[in-house]
Length: 218
Image 1 (cartoon, rainbow, N blue to C red):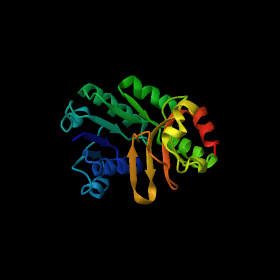
Image 2 (image 1 turned 90 degrees about the horizontal axis):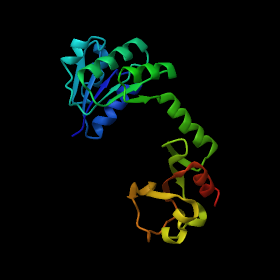
Image 3 (image 1 turned 180 degrees about the horizontal axis):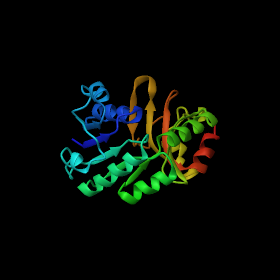
């Protein structure tokens, strides 16, 4: 079972902690507020009330071999920087830290953060993509060029197999999964003979320009 610590239980941190616990992670939730800790106590495996700006306090509840720590203290730049620095001193190998600005992110990286989280920017990016592209059901950027996208099945793909469509050759697109939302079914890495049916959605990976061409093929 993956061991994860979430520090800072605002809206983002508390949602993340609960979701991780539901996904069978062993979650340690840390905050300085008694009320917030009491609200989440029954939803995660372990809770601690402490001031994460104090190195000795963090040392008393965290061990270096925990899989990763998420620092969700976006409301206090000083606290998130100090906490990240302390985690690095403790020897935590994977530290994901929430940042409010690019300068904040640069400081967090400098003191030990291995990954930076921009929840608002990421949510805004995904929402903008869905507004501009109504048939795009979800969007995950992998790099400046490549993305993973869930799209509605184009009408001219219905009742055709992946072999017939040959999306890899025509568009440079890899089909990662075929979903049937109404039946709550997901077929990961579908075989080439899979027949696409009305109501299916495709989860595809490729260059954004190629995905755009695919979406316009209907």
